[in-house]
Image 1 (cartoon, rainbow, N blue to C red):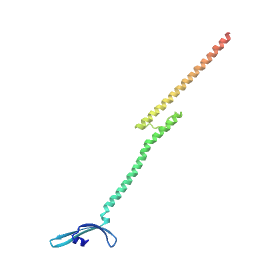
Image 2 (image 1 turned 90 degrees about the vertical axis):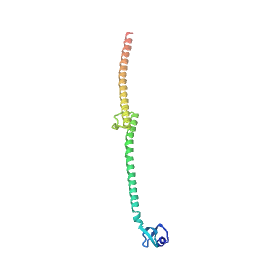
Image 3 (image 1 turned 135 degrees about the vertical axis):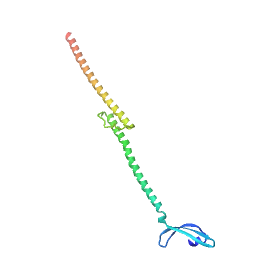
Image 4 (image 1 turned 45 degrees about the horizontal axis):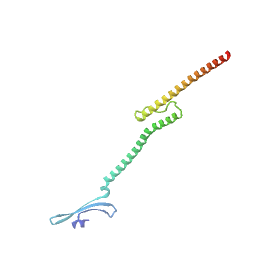
Length: 163
């Protein structure tokens, strides 16, 4: 390396010491009038790359942390969205089977899912009220029909006694 610098070569290279340590070295010739010198600078690779290795470790840790945070956040976000939709689906399935008892749907949300749940709950109540109204009117009609049949029997019985 020194002989290369003294012969006029400028370079940066890697080498391994006799003890097995890896080094970076830079060398260049220096000529002052008639005196020829060589400037050689060397540093161990571990020291030269310490900041890079530390930054790489920090980057890996930051990326792993970000991945874990994103996975956890996406899990909670998906549950936040899908859980009410699943409850709404179950309530719709129950309603389609004729079960119009009080719903288990949470109406506390103020977003689109909350508005959908509120609309479904109104529809459920409306259907239940209409079914109760139909049952009530059916009972009234059955009572009226029973009265008409009874009166018809009396009229028919009265005509037969007049003959």
